[in-house]
Length: 443
Image (tube, rainbow, N blue to C red; front, side, top):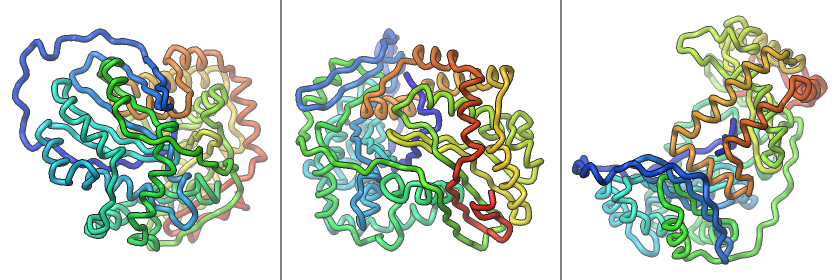
């Protein structure tokens, strides 16, 4: 199973929690089930079914669509944010009360997760209760109603989401706006000036155009493949015409938002690797870990990070590596007190411009990347989302394949990628007290 490394960011909205502790199951109900490799089946209507049988008592099933915020029409940004918000509201088959009651009775959780290139409806439940909630998952993902009065009554949830956005998240959103301008530039959050402006008709139009059988995947972790195929065949999804998307291009640019914060948050990036090029994606991921991905030891100094060494404790810096189907971003994100922000950003940019690795550093980076890859599979929630993305993008890879690819990357290949950063044009976003933050043309 492949890792996203640092793939598309996602935002989760979870509806439905268990209201009481489930009765203790009989010992035979959770008898070990042999672990199986990934199995994939493509149905006649275009739906792709993928599953991984694990030795776990929890089953996770998702219905994913290759339709994220980059699919939103102009002046309709925020539709995907509303899809997340409405995932637990009434649909054509179930009222909100019925949906919540059945999910709670089963001790399950219904979640809608979205990114710039996907929407994933998923449900988690114990093996003996998964059947009770699969129909509700299908209702939420394929039978949306978008009743106008329910949209109006729940619009405060959108406002709460916007109020809760952290500066480090906001700066990443602005970086996409500066780098891509359209398509992938669309935020994961509804623009404030469009809150309450989307109608039921516009949501239904988006669903009809993008949530189709030919760009859908049904994925499962901890469930048999035959069972999942039968479930996928029962879904009421209509085919449609493929949506033409504007090819992504990374541009130089800058977005600055001054606030009264005592800190400055800055993200700087240039073109990285796309998900279509596995070798380049792995090479950039290794370079990222060479530069540093934060402080892995609690209360540590980040001594193993080139970026943190460069700023000498004046701020926090981490390498940034985001991968999409046809584009990528590579750079760094930094946070620092306003007085130190200038020297922190300048020092981090210098490290990026002069990046290089030796065999010892590459060996350490490979160990970190392999650990990140394998640890991802320990979390079945992350595994389900990763399986969804791979299935939608037709880029399924086994862990053994990726581990082999990591081993084959040489220091010369990483340095070849790093050398291109010396003359690269940057996109930059900054939020906070920017009195000492340099402009992008000064880096």
